[in-house]
Amino acid sequence: MRRKWQNFKPVKAQFGWFWLVQVAATVETGLLFLAGVYLRDAEALALAFVVLLTLGWIFFRPGRIVPVVVRSLVFADVAFWMIPATFSNAVNHSSLGSILLPGILGTTAIVGLLGAAGFLISRGNQAAGSRAARGVAALALAVILVVAGFAAATASTTTISGNAVAISATNARFSATTLTVNHGTVTVDFTNNDLFWHTFTVSALNVDIRAPVKGSRQLSFTAPPGTYEFFCAIPGHKQIGMRGTLIIH
Ligand SMILES: [Cu+2]
Image 1 (cartoon, helix red, strand yellow):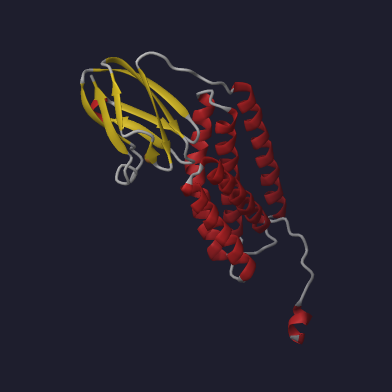
Image 2 (cartoon, protein in one colour):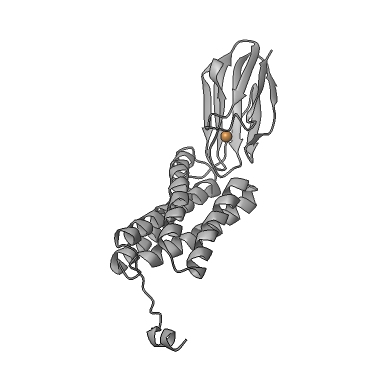
């Protein structure tokens, strides 16, 4: 016990890459958890749990490389889906939350990836990159403020009318498995309540509506009478039941 105490040095605040990836992981866990509860999205909760595990892993075990790599995979996954979602919802003048949520999640994920990269390149030196890491953190805050400002300035709501059907996706399930409309010009209003992307796709009609988190997308197309299959084109989603029948009279 004595020798351990001799080696003990007071922990100094080291605002380096390791600090950055820890902060990003903490923020991302909280955001993913809130998003999971708010959207009732099991996928978001599962990702929050994985990042939380890496935080616990680092807290209770000395090894740091493996948990940082594990959370980098989550960061990469989140960034891959959330950055395009932010731009897509911004371009479509979607609601404030539908721009802000993926915007903050995506920015935090990028910060986490940068922190993880810096930490791994410095071979796990906790003190490395202190100036650069603080710069990245400051830049990320600025990006989030710009996204918030842009979202507040452009957000709006849209309504649809005519021969229209509304369908939504929640927890990787469509709200309806059979849709019935009259032939002619058909409008589909597709809303995604999950954190990750879903599509409303009808291959036979060349219809492919892609909606990110909390996004609503409308598409009008001309369709002859018939029975068509619709499904989600995200890999694996059709197989777990995201499919249904579109009947056009
Ligand atoms: Cu899907």
